Every structure is written in C-alpha cells, then in structure tokens.
Amino acid sequence: MIDLHTTATANGYKASIMLEEVGLPYRVIAYDLSKGEHMKPEYLALNPVGRVPTIVDHDAAGGPLSVYGSAAILLYLAEKTGQLLPSSAAERARTYEWLGVVSSDIGPAYSGQFVFNIIAPEKQAWAIDFYDRLCLRLLGPMETRLGASRFLAGDGYSIADVIAYPVAAVSMKRFPGGLDAHPHIARWAGEVGARPAVQRGMKIPR
Image (cartoon, rainbow, N blue to C red; front, side, top):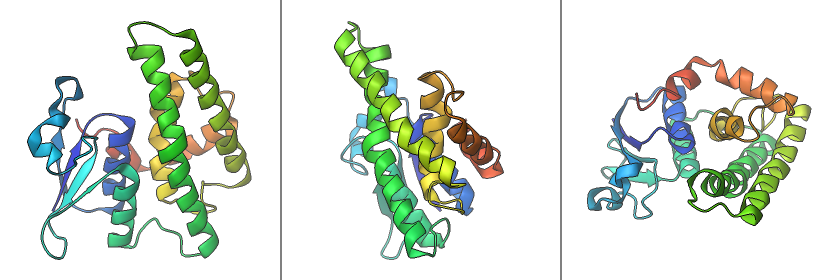
C-alpha cells in the first residue's frame, strides 16, 4: 500500500495521475495548504521541504520509504512498476529532459506568475510582466515539440506527459487563459486528458 500525501493542485495531480496509471493501491491523505497543514511536524518528518505531494511506500524493501517531489515520485513509481518509461535510449533521454523542464522551468515560472498576479497584496508591474513573458516564452518549446511528436518523449505516452499535463490543464488555462494559440499543446492535452486514469487522478483528493 502507498500513502499519497497531496492536495488539489497541479503538483498534487501529477502524483495521483501516476498512481492511477500504474494501478498501485493507495490511500489519500489530503492537506489544506491555507491552514499550513503541510508544515506540521509529522509531515515535515516525511518531507523536510514541506511541499506536496509526498508518497510513502509501505511495500518497499527495508520498510516504509517516503519519496517527495513530483519528478522523483514519477521516476520512483515508473521504475517500481516498469511502466511509462520508454525503452529506447533516445526517448528515455527526452523523458528525462521534459521532467527537468517542467520541474525546473515551466512549473516555477507558473508559480511565480500565480504569486505576483493572484496572491501578492500589492501588484508590481515589473514582476507581473516578467513572469507573464517567461510563461509565454516557455510554452514555445513545448508547442514546437508537440508539433513534431505525438507525446513529449516521442511516439509513446510517458511520465514526461504525466508531469506536464496538470500544468496544461490547470496553469495554462489560467494563463494565458486557454490553449487556442497553442494548437499542438491543445491537441496533446485533449488526448492525454481523455485517458481514464488521468481523469480519475485529476479528481484526487475528492
């Protein structure tokens, strides 16, 4: 059994989609970020960074194992189950690249965009402009890639698509407000979003 510590955010959905895709049994422990539940000592004992999601694999060799960070969780579950990692060296390399791009570039860009556009009590024009431009710039390589291949790693669906889909389904719909200007991302998001496991994962936690 796997415990999924999560919340209803783009990052949380990455882990729940993956668990649904690989078919491992899991139970959900939901957190209210507005109440600071992710900073309680019992959660920090599992994830000292205090970010969501985290999984705890109670079936791991050597006893319960906690894994935090969406990219690490996806890689761990892919290796554990032998699913959603391409077999070819080229597609596996593309998978690793897009895991990094979403985790290190696209995700943080949208976090900044959300903070300065939505959360900040005082709106700073330079910060809003910076993150708006950054998000739009980073959509360019993704649009180009999906114009050249069916999925981010190539012809096969992989953890690269799992980690990127919630960003398209949640963050990109918020800004720039839709995918009309990015038809290749829209085509890909429609195909990925039609997968039953993805639809189930996007409803966790209920």
